Image 1 (cartoon, rainbow, N blue to C red):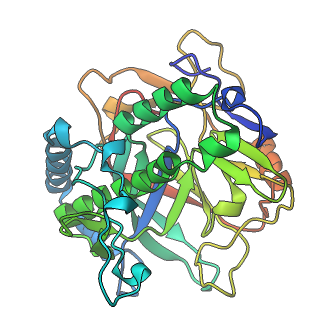
Image 2 (image 1 turned 180 degrees about the vertical axis):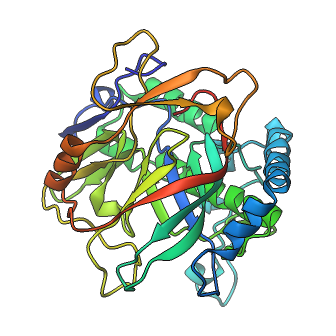
Length: 368
């Protein structure tokens, strides 16, 4: 159970024709973690961008705090909402041009970026599948969801769950837009962080933004912490909480640890076709295969079991926390038993697990 008294950490399956009311839809559907690799041209043992940030830690903290202040100061009336969704009926036909060439699927109005649960820069020593040496890499990582649209989606499910099927809910335009908008928000926040810290991250224009002025970073790895999936071949709907679907996860799987530990990146099998440096889809043939993507945080009054790690965020110089976030947080640390379960889910123990260590990160109070 989480702080919202919701069941967490499960994989639910039902028939696609069942009523949508049977699905345990969470309040933060499509929460995800997105990683962006910072380009590095040098061949030195230590990444130049990492060394620059370490030598001017206060300057980096100030720049990241400036991004956070800017996100918090955004006009709440311009927050993303379902009213932003594109309407195909409003697209006017162009004479002499085929419709799919003239179609410009943009949002109906501009919306502002939202502050995620975690955002920051993380570094790691990486041995990629495509190379035979260890490299010092820097990453921008953004994790969280879109709170306002999440609330709209949850109320929409409550209002319509008795009159719609699971398949209709999963395939609804609102569901697809929320999934895409969450990743787009993280891409745009990562671009702001990269610009503020002067990091060479690959960025493009968000083509679905009506103003065509918003820059978005190109993601390296996207891992959902909560997701919903329609299996058309078996006419089944899958809901996962605290995990991701392996069929939709490429270039590794990100696992969220406690704030002081950062993230783990589980690499998949060597990708000899698409060139994903952190591997392709895990070797799992079960329908709707899932993989855990977050650890658990223990309640203060609950007797913690297993390998437990205590994290006092206020004492960690790499973390930017809220002023009243001065308590210790107990969370489960993955151990041998956990890795054995991961092996059963398709992870090859011979593949590396990369530890993304926090260099500078903003962590909101209510998260791990």
